[in-house]
Every structure is written in structure tokens, then in C-alpha cells.
Image: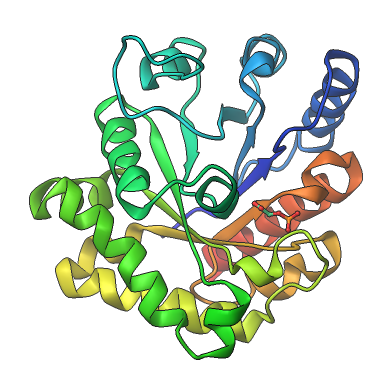
Amino acid sequence: MRRHLVVGNWKMHGDIQHNQLLLEGIEQGLKNDSNADYVVCVPNPYLFQARALLANTQIAWGGQNVNQYEEGAFTGAVSPHMLTDLGCTYVILGHSERRTLFYETNLTAAAKFDAAIKGGLTPIFCVGETLLEHQEGLTEVIVASQMDAVIATLGEAAFQQAMALNMVIAYEPVWAIGNGKAATPEQAQTVHQFIRNRLAKRNPQAAEQVRIIYGGSVRASNADALFSMPDVDGALVGGASLLIDEFVAICKAANHYATICEAT
Ligand code: PGA
């Protein structure tokens, strides 16, 4: 039984005053909804604040990126240990903005995945095709190549271990990010099922445990329909994670589906 997971990706937004209102609002809103898991991935300077406000709540916090090295002369970089030291349990990796704006390759994303696992973080590994790739019918090829890079870097045994442990995959079609044009629930389901089937070829049991969440213009208005799909185990939420009511409503939708799944 997979627990639904909703992750807020704040990107480069926030300040101390606004964060406090947002985090307190989310915490209040989700007090009685404990059937799903909730995470906020905040900018690094605010991890300390997230820890102070979220410790002993049911909301976890995490980073939006991490460096693949443990320590050293890497100006501007943050190591896995620095994230866990601040109480992070999750880290988003391979986000399309990292890939396009910061030139991260499949190989870098895979190296970071490896470092995150070794450092005790749960990677939320993003995969997804661009609009052009989508239009050319290359979705599965692209998603498969992004996953294969991780498997090649980790090696089969370590990847299987990551599957069995806790890794999360976020399917984020680039054409759906930040523009209000989410994939339809059926489109998401098709790709999620493809990802799960691919994992199942390596280890059918572990593949059933892996949470595959959807990202790209998730809102309160479409969360229910997305979560009703059998292989959509939650959401990675950008813009709507900055609005208390929207984010709480998305989390409640996940909580609601978890309750339905438990009852059946
Ligand atoms: P969005 O962003 O919800 O604003 O589309 C999602 C993401 O980039 O993780």
C-alpha cells in the first residue's frame, strides 16, 4: 500500500515573514489529515526556519537540489550531509529547471541521486519530456533515458536497493510546468504506468512500493482527478505550494484518496 505524497517546490520564492505565515497556515490546515505524507522543499537559506517551525509536525522539509560531493572546494554548493544536518529527509533532483537553466545533464542528476541515497536523503527524481519531444512522440524514450542514467550510475544492486528503500519519481512533463496546462489524468497515468512497468522488470515487488508523483500545474481544482489514477501517488507542486488554501486543498485530496484506498 503506497502512501500518497504531496511535495511543495517553492523554487526561488519566499522571505522570512511570508514563509512563517505559509508554514503555519499549512500546518494548521493539515492537523487532522494524517493519511498522506507532506513535504515542503524550501530554498536553502530557509531550511533553518522550516526546521524551527515544522519540527514535531507531520510536515517534512527538504532541499531543491544537492551537490554530489561530500565536502570540499565547491563554492556555492550544499552537500547531502548539510541537508540532513538541518533535518531534511527529501531532496528534489533532476528538476527540468536544473537541467535547462543550470545545464545539469542526466549524468549529473544521476550522480546527485547516488550521493543523496548514500547521504540518507530520499530523492525525488524528476523525469519528463519537453513540448517538442512530446509532440514528436518521444515521451517514453526520454523518460526511459533519464531513468537509465540513474541505473547506470548506481549499478543494478544499488538501484534496486533505492527502489526498495524509498526513492520517489516525479513525472513532470516540461510542457505542463508553471503554465496552468496540466497533463490530463489519463496522460499522467499512461506515463506513470510506463515508469512502473519499467521498474517492475527489475523488481516487481519493489516497483509496487515506489511512489510516482505527478508535477506540472497541479492545483486544488485538478488534484482529485489526478489522484484518482491508480499509478499517480501524489504531486510535486510548484506555484500552488505558495498559497496556503491551494496547497492545503491538494494535500487534503491526497489524504482523501489514501483513505479511500485503505477502505477498499
Ligand atoms: P508548477 O511547478 O506546479 O508551478 O507547474 C511544478 C514544478 O516545477 O515542480
